[in-house]
Length: 221
Image: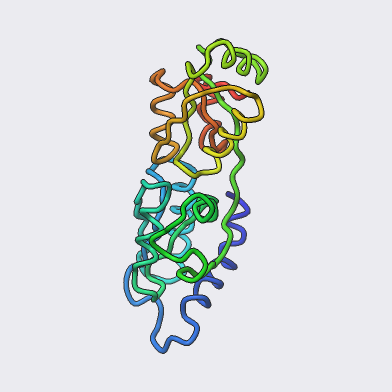
């Protein structure tokens, strides 16, 4: 977060140049909206609000944050693609934007032609977390349990086609275990179900999961 704030002016300059080049009128002429493809409460929510605050301060115009979860980020990305190409709608995309190009034969937009990359705001680190009540203390213990009880365990992610989803699939393939994948529309609803005891395992974005780990509600393997 400190790095993001430190480089906020650089990010803002790139945004203005990218959307204003060749345009005769001042920008922005109305409120700007940042579209987040996950539900509120996750790491991208925090990131979008930080950027929105700095942009609003810089431009002197309201910068809103709007959440459009669902469809493995397709709902939000399609909304951005169909918006007027004047810079007043900005998409906050994740690795799922690139992953979807390989998982879907037909997308409702052209991944390469319908968007202008502006700036990389940061990166997330994935971690394997479990419920403390599961009774496993390391990855080997989780693998042993999953092998004893195929398809007994479920693992959650912040959406189909997300890096967390693919990390789970790679883990199952490499470990030779079977677990049921349960996708969510973001980290917040996933953690709510984990704390409620409905999902015992998740490949989670640590930026948002660590407060729960420190509180003892989740265990980081």
